[in-house]
Every structure is written in structure tokens, then in C-alpha cells.
Image 1 (cartoon, rainbow, N blue to C red):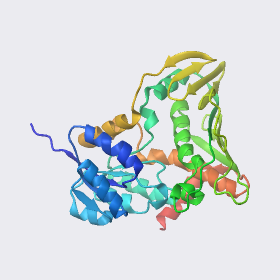
Image 2 (image 1 turned 90 degrees about the vertical axis):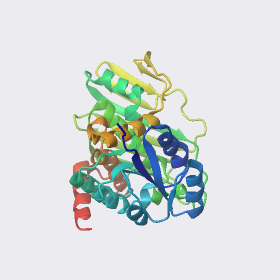
Image 3 (image 1 turned 45 degrees about the vertical axis):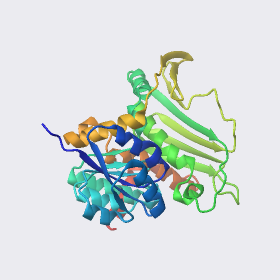
Image 4 (image 1 turned 135 degrees about the horizontal axis):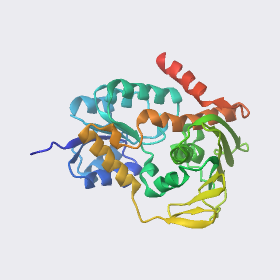
Length: 340
């Protein structure tokens, strides 16, 4: 019995496409990457030649018209996402969206609405849900009452490179946006709680393109609290502290990098080498082939619940730390999306 290949098109020919998703897709049996689209003609040509992709485009809608596509990988920066994913979904094309899904909540809401209406298979690149380390942390906390979750990221202060989007705060080129959406999703996944309130404060001295520090404060759906802290300017960092720390009645659980879990400072789990990027790509292709979204660990609409607390916090910082109800923030974005 012959099984038709899953025909994939890719939006974006940047480093993540070249270093992660395209190599992964080439490793998966029954996948044919048929087209690549990027506004940078030279970058598109180089990437297509490197991976043997026959269709090269600089306009996504032209690509949709010319190609037969089963699944679209959207690997473009969040700030450039407009209606390209919506058009694909309305054509019945299944959607893999890298995170963060969008820099404006109403855009993400419109894409999510299209996904719901068409019923296509969809997911967002929250790869760590597929890593056994985070699955084990979720299991270890399942019968414990979580009281607080903490994430922190300490990094060197980035050099400002004129013309590079990741140097520009308003385009989302800041750790609190990219890492923040990641961290929010993994706190949701491990605690099995959603964020119901969000508040944030930034310290950004005049003349600097990034905040020196950003602090997000959450209340979770079962009453627990959470904090996300991002500090730039320290090249050494806090090497001995866990990225994630979960407090519960009776102690605390720490997730140390991608290496181990400790409960009350005792190692309870050591991770074997694992590639969550490949695993998520593999499962997404299998879900598309089987038309079974249940194989995936989250879908595009669920991803809104990880994006919204960060964007609500960002808005909070503009309003002197005003606290946002995440549901209210989502409802306002949904109304704007409906009138767009």
C-alpha cells in the first residue's frame, strides 16, 4: 500500500528554519518539503538549494495558489504575522506556528478562530512539553498543592545591531517576550493551571533599547502565584540555580536546565539526552497524516493562554503596573479581531 507524502511548505528561511525544522523534516519518512517562502530572495534561494526544496517564493499567497500543500510551517518573527496563516488555514492547510504566535493579541485570536472554524490540525512550538524532564516534573507535582512557581533568566546585555529586529523591543526582540511565552507555557503545563491575572514592571533607563530587568507576576487558576524574572547585563548569571522552581506544601521542586529534577535539594530524576524539537516535528507530521490532533500536546487556540499573560503583562508595564484579568484581555482582543 502506497502512502502519499505529507507535502510541507515553510514560511521563513531564517536560522531556526535552517538549523532546526528543515533538518528535522528531512529526517522524517514520508515528508516532502515542496516550497519555501521568504521576502529575502537570496536567503530563500540559499536555503532551498541547501535542502533541495523545488519551489521558491517571495509571496505566500502566490505559493498557496501554485502548490499543493498539506501543512505549513510558519517560522517567521512574531511581529510580521498578519493574515498569511489565516489564508492557509482557510484553504485547509494544517498549521505549525513557531512561538510566540504574534506580537498583537488580536492577530493571534483571528488565527485561532480560523483554526477552530476549519478544524485543521494545529500546534505551536512549545517543544518542552515533549521533553520527558518536564513531563516528569508534571507527574511529580500532580498530587501536590502548588503554592508558587518561579522562573528566572539572567543573560548578558545584548549588543544593539541597527536593522536587526531582535534588537528592537517593539518588534519582540527581547527575552521577556520570547522566553516569557515559553516559560508561561511550561508553568501552565507542569502545574496544570492557567494564568488568570497578569502584572509586570520593567526597568529601562533612558537611551537603552532593552529593559535591564522585567518582572512578571501571575495568579494561577487554583490560587497559586508565579513570577517570571528577566535580567540582562550579567554575563555570569546564576549558574547554580534552577530555571524553574515550584513550591508546594512540604517543599519545593527545581528543574535544573535540561539535566535533572530535585525535590527539597535531593536529585529525583536525571534526564537522558533528548531532542524535543525533533519529537514535536515528528508528532505534528504524524498528526497531519492521521488527521488526529489528539496526538499533539497542545493546539493553536491553547497557545493563546500562554501568549496572553505575557502581552497583558507588557500592557500592564505601560500602565504603571495595572493588573490585567487575562480573560478580559483576551475578550478585548477577540472583539478587536472580530471588527478587523
